[in-house]
Image 1 (cartoon, helix red, strand yellow):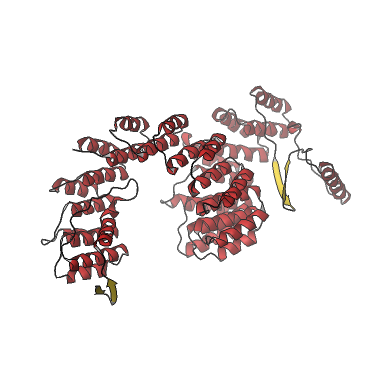
Image 2: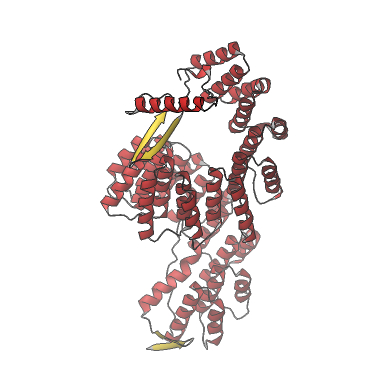
Length: 598
């Protein structure tokens, strides 16, 4: 049997496929985590009504609400499912006013599912009072209704109200408990969530995983592991949560042990482990694990995988590996995904290929704010301040609104290019933009901008205007670096003393202060700072650089004598110095006496 609609012939569907379609329709408004399943009710007794209801549900899922409503109006006979299908479609499409008008019609047919659909719409639209009034007026409520209301409170940040509501519930199931557990964990109420978990009459794998996730995110990794070991059943999500907790807390060896024990892995498992290595700057290990993933063949890399691997390559500035990965991404048809495209731009920029980075941006078919931020950051990385500012203006002309990341890149570009006035104007523009929250990174970039240009008075004015709790080690450290560049020993001492109070174990602060004193000829003060550093057992990390030659990355540290070609390299440097001197130029030795032996 065929049914005609909108010029198309639709096959008559068997009742089981209609049932599945209707279940999907009626369950949509409960979101993803945790899912609440609505028990099926009696099916429409008329086949014609059932087929029309199915078409309305299909049109609603596609967002074609005008057509769905037209079909609804043309139905000679409707049942409660017809009304629920259309009302739910309007709720799904965010057209809550139309849903409410339909719901309030005198001839409307409603049951508990219909009421719950509109209730969910109010909650998702943050209309809490309307949701409360509707819930209070409901003639019938089932467990799904109660769970929906509690989840709505949680999603709107009303965790205390959700807890009181949970206590009022006449009956609860595992979904009720899991919903509250998730809300408590997200709100940081770890102890209260653990008490609820202990009181649960029954638990499923979601219950266990929710608590383990909350403990891990709060830094209680050992406690999370104890709970993980007690789990009666585990799925791949549970394993991913546990070893990711180790990786995110820098315990990468324990993460790898758990990763190796996993009975099965998915793409999230591989990506999380790779990302853990990248966060700890173990870039070579991350690339090796990615190769292992490709050889395993059971999981295909996704966008997140490629972003992490591109970060590893960017950190190494390994252009050859970057080009090879770019080919893999093209074959995976993910090149034009915003985050992947932005990571490709960043990788080429850090490998010194700003021209290729620009080509990747130009060929992007889906430019969004992420892509624009990526190319602006690329030019900032290369110190091309003018180009970064021009791109910023072009981005705004295209209708894109800058965010906090955009401004960090712009201020950094102005700092490295010495565009002080332009940087100050951009900062003022950001402050006036009420949609952007001024963060620590913005003030740090501003300090760097003033310090590099010798405008320490402006920097001091900015610091004086900040609240005491906003003065972080990064901001003061950047200001101290400006004092070092300008040889301002007196100002540097005041800032350095304050910085040492905040970060007494930061070797960089001691080194900067020592260098400031030495540059001003105050060698005794410099020696005292060095002695304090030694007494605390601190050691300055040597500078490090690397270059890729012939598919091999060569790494160098300050005063390196361990490289296999060190004698030849120093000999070449000596010859270059001689050539410069013979040309009549002075060769400045920037190695400070206080840095000898470091």
